[in-house]
Length: 124
Image (tube, rainbow, N blue to C red):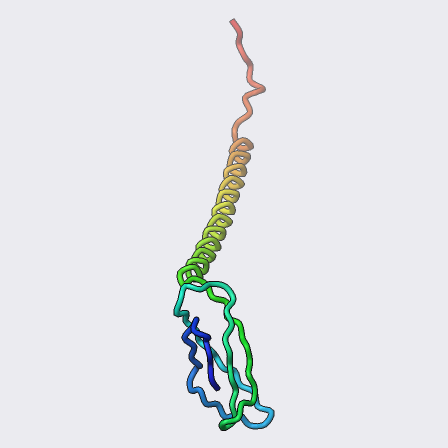
């Protein structure tokens, strides 16, 4: 198997560039690419499959090139956003639980308080 990055990328295969497959056998092959330039977006590269010295098939594949830092920044920012949202939900639940407990305590205190409305009042 031969890879041609067309002068925009360094391409390599996972393991060796020689794969032996039996009839009706399939195998996943990973292609690793790193750019030589500051290109971004969809880029094409060519994969040539050979049997001995005969070309069996040529495949044109696409790679989506992104800035190296932006992928990790996006991944980290998603994780941070998820953690903040989970924290916010837990905080709101805790506040609701606290307010419900306070309300219940005030109602119970009001029920236990003596009723002074029946006492005599003196006016001068």
